[in-house]
Image (cartoon, rainbow over all chains, first blue to last red; front, top):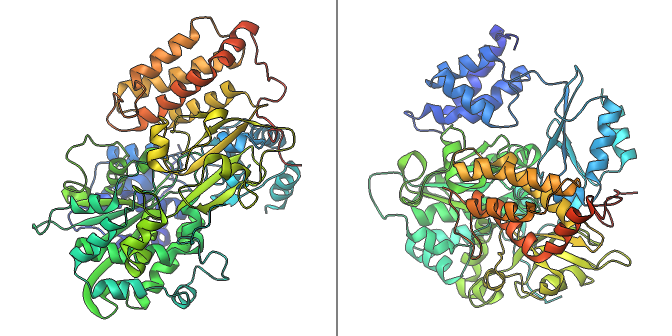
Length: 162
Length: 443
């Protein structure tokens, strides 16, 4: 993991937003704001960078081990720098009954990546049910849903990304 | 289709249905006004009379759950709204969040008043970024209009409602895992008792209710508990959102009478519109992948808590997944088993070790490397996690263990010859198209 410290502007933005978050939790339970704080860090830095994680722990008055434990427990927190676009392909039952395995294989070939791998531009992952079973198959790109997909539609979506 | 008045979906067809203005036009927040003229006990009693049962999975009576919260006491009371919809095959709460967030927020306000609660957390699964944004806008509207904040529709009643996004962990849909996550920790479930209604979030009494459950509350208060109870069956009040997916002509979310059978759901012209051409039903999961599977000759069962329980399965989260006769059930079960192996939180040994073991055996069978003893080994592993029947004998702290073992027990029990055929042949008999009619994908 490479280190990625906050710029003064980023730190100011983080502090301001975190103060707002903390108003919703009991004053003696700052650690409860861990998930909102990690989401905030990730929205600023693009990932849960180690220095940012240490800063979160300090601000919430918990050990850095605890912060790391939480960050690594949840799949949406990137403790390693992901590609510019994170593609999560659902292959759970309802999606597989509508061709999800074929969709994932198509993307692996197209992006020259196996599920779980990253390049500068892409992170490709196989994921669990995204609550789009009625509009299967589906995937998310940076948490935006794309549903009722065909291979042609996926190509179009991928190729249009800036 | 059995005619039933729409409660939850009644505004979904209205343009801009997610806005406060639209919700108000449809009569929104009238129930809150009415509730504030009642005592908190009267509100709880109305919910009790309604026979409303939890729509997240367990089907527990909501009013009864509320009544476990101690009256008085020095500790604050909390409501945690479970919007962590993650049970495979379930996609109803997301539409409530997208299309009618104020119905949920009104339900929250009424429930908070009934429980003497002044702090509510909505725990929304991390993948629902768009839905969370819609809910945040609705919360801001509710503050602006004097529904949340220091006063509630003019009455002195401080209420803060704050949304926390999860970050990708099925276990956080389990109520104590959710509470741990809300406390800023990994979502490791807690041993019960004590139950959250007594010792929950920050050690205080906490009610955890599902989105659809709370969205029903305004109608119950406005129209009365007896009216709501009469919409349902003897033991289950109201309508139900059913999520239909898999090998069926028209998948989707349908608000139905709980007297609707699985067969009617699949074949009714206003619901699933039947099986694809030339195909018949092979298997149906009636309540999310955690619910034991039904074979084709068992689908004349009502989509109601007690009726499904009598069939040794459960209504669960309302996720109905259909598999047609050209689908490989071993392949389906293997994928389900992988899900639980991926999502086991690692706390209890039978689940942490057993779930990947189940997946490995199923992979071996599906890929043609199974041995004659594998089916028995598979059942032994499942039994070590949770024996079956009945449901609920799990050897783990939370129900994820049961949820992981139940599909294995039920698929093997009902389709054993197909597992054995894989082993005899040394390959999958459906190897060309294991996923059934639509398994090749959309054209």
